[in-house]
Amino acid sequence: VDLGVVVKLITFDDPELTGPYAESLLPDWPLLVDSDRSLYRRYGFERGSWSAIYGFASVLRYLWLIISGHRPGKPGKDWRQLGGDVLVDPQGMVRMHYISKTPHDRPSVGLLMNEINGEWFLRSLSVLVW
Image (cartoon, rainbow, N blue to C red; front, side, top):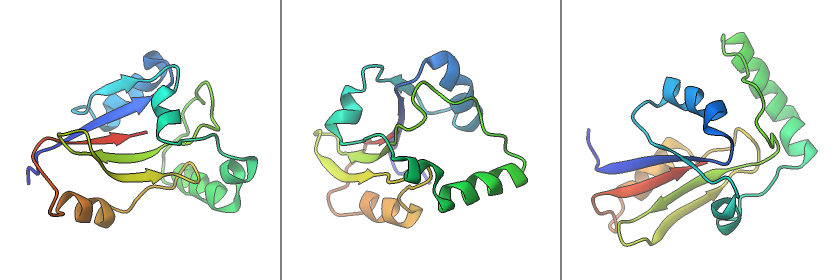
């Protein structure tokens, strides 16, 4: 189903490091680089604490990924930098703003779909994913 949503991946890391990873998983989504992290700061995406990065839930998630056959990639420039998800309508209004608390914290698909299917939804919505 085409919902008219445009997804953009944003990273602060070098495209040489993140590009192959993004292309292997999400080849149709553009990868944008925010090397000075000005967008990260604007949206309140901060560095995770040691407990957020290496807490029990994160360790379990990494172990599950390894057991499932996924090998962790080479860490980027700042492996403590957390991201989030932002839904922006065609007029530039932020309609959803989710700040991740751990490396694996993401909004549910249901939450995203509820926001996308809301009354405010217009074609060409941008989803920014960090």
